[in-house]
Image (tube, rainbow, N blue to C red; front, side):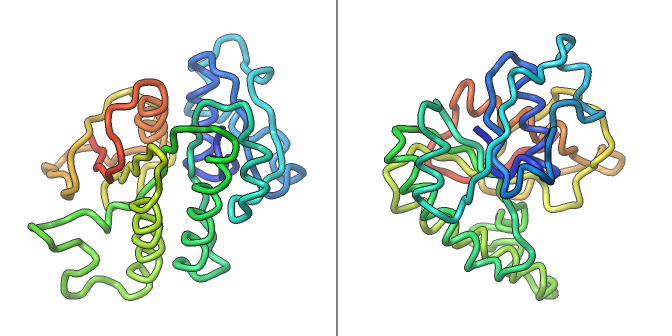
Amino acid sequence: MVFGAGGRAGRRVVAEAAGRGHDVTAVVRDPARHPEPARHPEPARHLDPYGGGDRVRVVAGDVTDGDSVAAVAAGHDAAVQATARLDVPSVEFYTAATRALVDGLARAGVPRLVAVGIGSLLEVSPGVRLIDTPGFPADAREFSLGHAAELEVLAGAALDWVVVAPPPVLLDEEAARTGRHRFGDGRVPESAQGDPVFSFADLAVALVDEVETPAHHRVQVAVSY
């Protein structure tokens, strides 16, 4: 099950999971706006030679409402949180969404949550997050603090969760899936000049890997090439 299935990360997660043969529930606020979210996005078409539309079920859901989360989550093994809102304060949205997920997933009996994080919360030195460095843009800091609030809520939850944070750059929306990625820790990943920009397609690979074979538990981890 993927919350935020119509977004840049979410639709690729749906495609990646369906391409691996999973039945996927794609949760969006308004299914009329996303009649086919991620069934055949260009970067992931090669994943599913059988045209896995039958594996994808699109449903309406509100990730900030525990009752809605519980209703759509029933019968699932894991959930991916890939939602974002720019029309409400970030801390308000992510606090409400994370509380609803913790509540709704518990009621539905879903034990695992894999969430898309943000690289600006990774550390550049011990105890110093990127957002805390001098000159970090104020608007980006405000959005990042929403993800920080998400982590605070998760820290007090009994749920088995992981937050996967890509590098703190604009991810490549056009690059095809390579399947290549590596997990780090809570630090900003090192990169060398000429390294490719991490892609949404390979972020989806990392997220689905954590659903299929959980390797990180109750922690934020970096992912990069």
